[in-house]
Image (tube, rainbow, N blue to C red):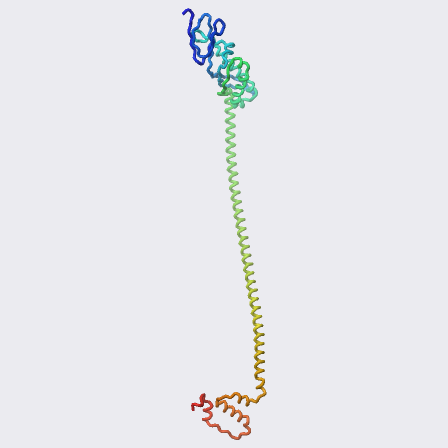
Length: 339
């Protein structure tokens, strides 16, 4: 009514209210009345944006690659951006121009500029595996870009979603990779078989070494047994020698004992002979008759026997001698007194 309008913005929109070319008010989430004929409203979105991109580059080996990804950013300095791009809105809040597309395109151009030099320096295969490196290149290029700083935006991140070659090169790479994988599979089979053969050789070698070790142990056991037998034989020989030496020593002692005993017996016999001789010497020169008388034997037969001996000594002097049977019987009787 009469050119007075009311407009309202959400909290994620930074608003500039220009009145006759001067900023009358600014801020986020404003709601106000304004006079449309001399007012201009600029609304800049402050939320983060995900900007998808896709562009093609040539590698060092002259192959085309397509890089697909997205860049996350937000507008951190709306005043600087409003000085470069037009974010003026109509009375109903619609943008008069689509400068947000210009902003996105400028960001994509800076990202492609930061990536192209890196892609041109590597080969196709390396490019297909360089997603992380390309992300780093994009981030570094955008953050160091003077144009990005002039726009008053902040880069939050960059992600590479895919890197692809042309269909013909993709099939060629697939074939090459398939052949390489087949070669690797064949090599793995060869290595597995070779490993099995090597393991079999090691097992046989181990068995032979075990047999050799067993034979060596048996040889050592046999040698130990021989040494034990030799030691036992030597011990037995030494025991026999010791026994013989002991027997010889016993015999020598026995010989010495016998010789000593013989010598002692001889000395004792000589002593006894000397004693007997000394004892009988006084009687040696005496007449046997005296000795007989000194014997003083009370047996009558002894006396009769002496008498017969005297008769026998004087037999040439005796003419006839008569001896009665009774006398002989009494002489031969054990106890003549019994008669």
